[in-house]
Length: 384
Image 1 (spheres, rainbow, N blue to C red):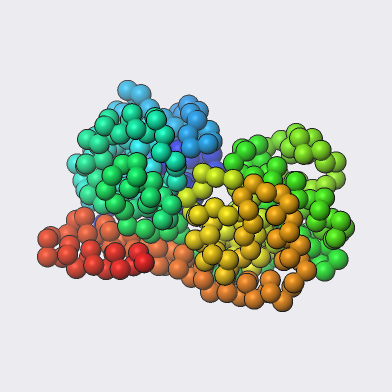
Image 2 (image 1 turned 45 degrees about the vertical axis):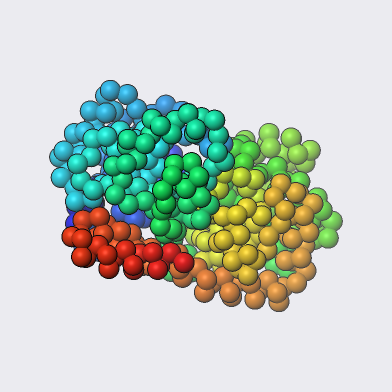
């Protein structure tokens, strides 16, 4: 099958949607499919061979963060040329309502279109105003996928219609087999607590985490807080009123280091305050063996099976985060039990399962009517 994947976001800027598309593309290629990806890119030097640049990007504020996207006449021509030359059996657009290459492709695609919705959003005046403008393009979508129930609700409430829930995928075995790094391994006297994300993006919750440091250190003075990701850690610490040595800043880390980090941590903290539709980093941390402490977001609760796979604290509440961390550190047997449960629960997010379900959707949109009925039954049974 010839599959065309489109992302609205700059390929050279790390992010969950692009990681999902990268892993899906490589999984499909490994299965023998021909896959092409169209993505905005400011730096084309290190693009994988299956990725084509749609042009340079501009920053726009979207869903509580700043995204780099591409649009305009030149980009439109690039999208149309890519679609024509690709002769795809299926065009799979991710985040199709973001003003970027996917929205352009909705108008120009002639092959069946599958759309994946990643975002969870509150209904806004802008969404209400834009809805009539989006409907002609949305009507060209043959099948809709949402990565979580939170993302599905956004589709139902904002756009109308429904979507099958197929979660983000993770190469569970790669994380489970990763070797720990001695620099980041904890001890009973000096446990390691980690965070990975954009430090200066408020919804990622860095200030919530920093607000819990002092309370945790009162009970566990040797606890180490390892912070990885882009941003100004000195400014974050200054805002929190903490000295520089309160955390160990790792900066941006490689994929190999991310694997080692999750294999080394005692606890991983997800302090996000909103705008999360799934929580793939939770799945990665659980796959690597770290205990997870996460904010009480709907999407995070779903990944953690309402607390069966990790501890949950009140969103935005540093005091309650400190309580959860102290509970995890003070009850090692219970923490070990949660980790064991998590190691089995993450199997449903492995790419071997997720890619097969996405291929069922592709088969459905290209199938004849009798074949489609059987595939519909299988796809929607897999959702629950």
